[in-house]
Image (cartoon, rainbow, N blue to C red):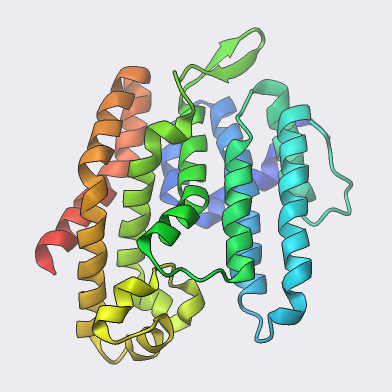
Length: 287
């Protein structure tokens, strides 16, 4: 497949997502934008598979084993494509996004660890691992949100070295953006709390300990959220209180990345993060 054409399906997936991350990536040069779309689309398709295909099933138990195999197969083929440029067979359900990763491997070196982390989070979803505490939430967020964020800042830091683009960051990107990613994820959860509750408890990626003081479980909260906005505000307030633990570390990360990135790249990152931080501050002061 022509290298430029290989990116097209991934570009379409990224654009159709209407993601703030995709809008921020539009400010990148063409090669890095293509790389962003390839990596984002690769992660998006497996997340959509788990949320929209598997978790939407009324009887998930009979499909669980195959869903786990789908996630692990996705991980293995995606990493092979990203690292070695290995093209999957056209019969592979994720062929087009894997092909975009293979095209990426020809022009850039990207750390495959985020794909390992995301697959672990997706398996947790498929297995429906209980999320009892905030510690459980953090274990999930390492893959579900810190992984895509780490790839994004790695792409920002790509520079031409020995014929391919390579990151100039001084340490693994996930270590540099973790708190910001988790804060933004919590803001996303707060923003969409009522909407997600209407779709069912399986979309409430929150620990039991946030509902227990209210005499609720994720299931009873999901059933009552539409009719009881005061309960929604109480849960949102508890999330905002927990999220406060990540605000100052997140601001510290952004300040540090200002020194590691070119000014235009740091502006892209701040343009993505600052609206979420402002939204957090609005939630924290108005609830």
